[in-house]
Amino acid sequence: MTENRQTSQHEQDRFPAHFDSVENISFNHRMLTLYLIAEKLTHLDGAILEVNFPWQSGLLSYAETNAFTRYSNQAMALISVLLEKTGNSEVIYLEVDHNRCLYSFASSQPQQLFNALQHMPCPAIFAAPAITQVDMSPSQYICLKRP
Amino acid sequence: MHLDEPQFKELKRARKRLSSEYAIKHKYHLVQSNFELVNQALDALLTCYIDQALSAVMNEAKNNLNAAVNNFILSARTYTAQLKRHVQACIPHDREQVNRVTQCIETEYKQSFTFRFVESLYDYVSYYGLSVHTVQIDSYGTAKPCEDQRRYVLNAFIERDYLGGPTDFRASVLKETPSKVDLRPLLDEFMACLARIHKVACDITQAIAKQSLYTVREFINVFIGEHGHSGNNLFVVHTIGEGQDMIYDQFPISMYAEHQAAIDEYR
Image (cartoon, rainbow over all chains, first blue to last red; front, side, top):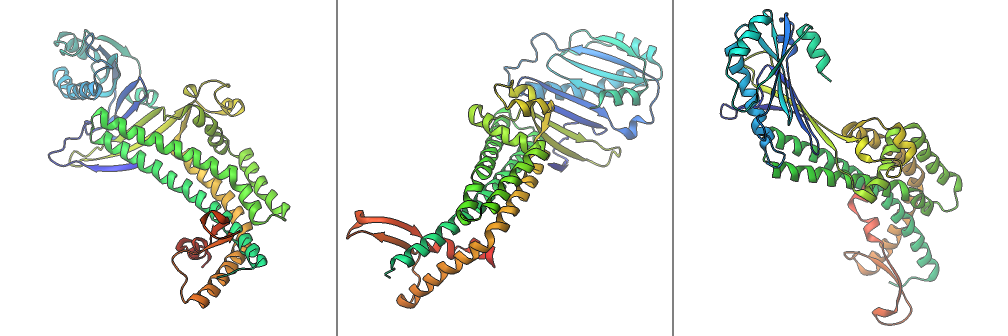
């Protein structure tokens, strides 16, 4: 089935406008990924920084119904907060599962981005992140990630 | 209206052929209806997702999808398993034509993984029931900020690992099953296989069904001539004495001859 959904002024789209999403829902596994749309991606270059935030211990429980949707919505809302604090960069990829949130940034100045991330306070829902640089262009990175 | 023995036998034979032909079409319509129900259940599940429904509502939508898939598999096997018998009942003396149906089913089985997989799912469904294992929802964003339209696509998958080992599922088919089977194209292709088989069966039975319908209508017309009307539903009754418990055999005829759907089929 394909459905086009016109969101009204009162009904907020769950996903940030410039992202495609893929969500897998299985018996005991759920994963949401966001990919910056191709039109935006082609204008980007520079390096990739992966910021891997584990959830705060015990926050995301399988027992609590609707927890995944609630916390993944919070993770998506954080994209604009992170961009505000890190300046000249773009989030191109987000992966949310029951263990962690992985934000992938594209930046022409990765060292500055790294420093900004180091100095910003850790969002309350996450434990301390691990930051890794990936030697790949944004397009190559998304191409690799996208099924 | 009294019938003599040859008339009774003629009507009984015509009714048997009509009911067999009706069963072929009725069972095919059941599969088609279940196919529609699967699609509706997939649509309902996607609507729940878009509306961010509560888990309880999502679970109910998933249960409806599983029920529709199970019913589809069961009705499909009911069709393929009984088809030869129904065709044979229509043309008991034409072995060659009956074999055409068997060969057609065998050809589909040999040529189509989809057909083999759905056929094999019947055994699995009978024993374990079947759940759709994974649901994937893709959505597509837009580059223009003024556009607030997002397109959603839902796919449901049966996963090989969840089907178990060769003791749980037909081993030869399990061996060729990919890790994930997308439900929607699977059922689309299976319906195409079934449509080919159904056409062969209908082509074989059409002439004899028309002839049988003509026979039954002739008797109904004689009844109308005698009584001035056909009543609501005519039954042929073979009695061996007076009273309800003396009925030896009984069968309906109007339901085949005056059934609107049947009339449409032979128009």
